[in-house]
Image (cartoon, rainbow, N blue to C red; front, side, top):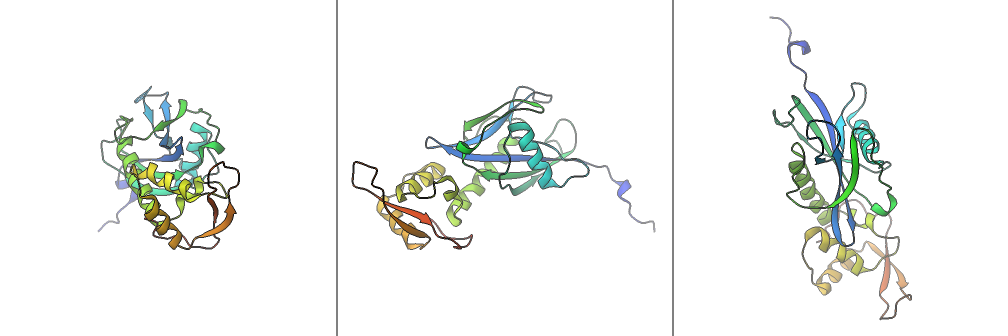
Length: 224
C-alpha cells in the first residue's frame, strides 16, 4: 500500500481575523475596517488577512492588526477556528480568530494596507459585516462575557485606582443590564482581590473609597 502524501490533498488558505473590544462613553464598541479590495469592497469587516507561509498564526494576527488599524502591542487571545467550505467567495479559506479587550484612549487608529478606514462601532449582534464576521463577532462577545464572569479582564479598562461604581458600570455595559448596587458591592468586595487606597477627596459629594487590584490574585475569580 502506498503511503499517504500531503500532495494528495488540496491546500486551503488560512487567515487570521481579530475582534478588538473596548468601552467608550458607557458603550461596548468593536474595531472594524472598511475593505478597499474585492470581495466585499466598501463593506465593514473585522481586521485580518492571510497567513504567510513562513509565519505563525499569532504573528500573522499581530501583523494584520497593525497593518490595517495601527493597533499593536496588545495581548491577543486565540478564540476559535471557522472553516465552513463556502465562507469566503475567493475559495477554501479557514480562519483562526483572535480577540482582545483594550483601552481605546491609549490607541491611535491608522488605516493602511488593503483597508480605507478603521473605526470604533457600537457593538450589535447584527452588524451586516463582510464574510461570516458577524458570526465570529458574536462568538467573541460570548467569550468576552464569560471572561467578565470568571476573570479580572474588566480591570484592564480601569485606572490604577478606581471605585466600585466604576467597576459596576463596566459590567453593566457588557451585560446590558443593571445590577443592584448593594449586592454588587457586597459580592465584589467579598472576592478579596482589592486593596483600599483611601477616599477620593476630589468630589463635592460623599467621597467614595478608592481601590486598586491586589497583586498575584490569579487568573480565575468568580466575579458575578
